[in-house]
Image 1: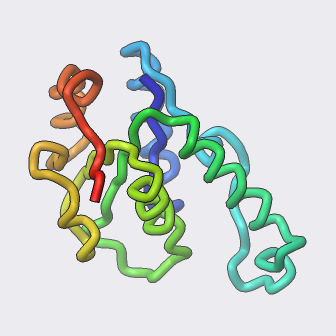
Image 2: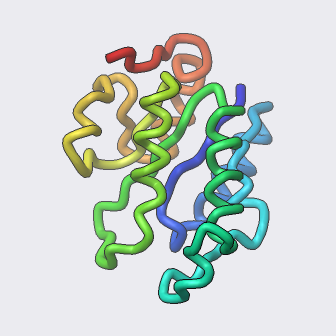
Amino acid sequence: MKFYFAGSFNRKQELQKYMYKMHEQGHDVTSRWLKTDHEVDISEKEELSPDGQATIFAREDIEDLCEADGVVFFSSADHVAKGRGGRHTEFGYALAIHRPIFLIGRRENAFHALIPERNVFKDFIAFMANIEYVTYGATAYRG
C-alpha cells in the first residue's frame, strides 16, 4: 500500500525513520518532502510567490497525495511554533480526494473530528501494530 506522511517539517528526521519501517513492511511512502531537500524559507517573499520554490513543492505534495492510497497525519501535541501549516492543508486535501486518513497523536482541530476513532492511534507503534486493519479495513470519509 502507498501512504503519504503529513507532519510538521521539524519532525522530518523522525518521520523518515517511520518511512523506512514502512518500507521494511512492504509499503511505500509517497512523500517526496521526506526524501529530498524540500524546505522553504517562509520569510522570503520570493520563495512564496507563484514563481517561487514553494509552488514546486506544493505541486509535488499534491501529486504525492494523489498517488497515495492513504494518508498518515502526525499531529503535534507540543508544537509551539505556528510553522508553515502545510500538514493541515494536506489533511484537507486528503479529505477532499477521499483518502483514508490515519491520525497519529491527538486531534488538533475540528476537521480531525471527521476521522473515526478506529483510525486514530496513540503513536506510530500502535499504528504499525494495526497495519493489517490499516491496509485492508480502512475506509475514507465520504462527507
